[in-house]
Image (cartoon, rainbow, N blue to C red):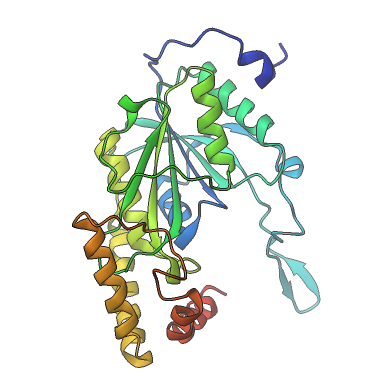
Length: 300
């Protein structure tokens, strides 16, 4: 039977919210990927031996020229090409509790088709709740706890109080569209977006991934092993502090901390980075240039 289009589904009656299947978690590598937080979190959610229940046609959704996959050249031939994959996998936590994980590159094209296919999986497997994990660069210091913004298709699904409230128009993503469409189709969908220091948005930042996983565990009760990330967190923070000291960035960091602390005390300040309120991205980039360069070299 052919799958109904998203336009056809929008006219259907809302579905029963009391689904009996596993929760579906989506963490895509793309627009909501500051600090690689979503990717790092998804890596902790993968067992390596889960069951693929749905595979998307990456060739139709991926812009190869904009995000060229890596391939090795050895002596006189190409080898070890890792093709991008976007899948929904049935995983289990340490206690055997099942959950679905949707991870991989954010689609560049055919977002509506992507949402439609996820919807089909949700209906087929009676998924009661879909949870998204994402990260955005914000004007926050790395020396303070990672802040999370919670969201959902119904107020009842937002399980924590957000420290800041605003109505802003932001660029959309495949994940935000997915949640929006699921709400239209009557499915429960929610998620967490962690705020990553904007001067560290281009490197792997484990504290943000840990914050996402902690929120996920609080919400679902899943038994997850986060210790590998916690070990990386200590190493990353130590190296950041070393670079701040060597590059003379203490003054800039102190100003950011003062702003953050004032906000958390109730000051009417936005945490969205702007030239007027924060040190510029160029200033902070100069302070962390050597650190970032070394991180990129290590990744390569």
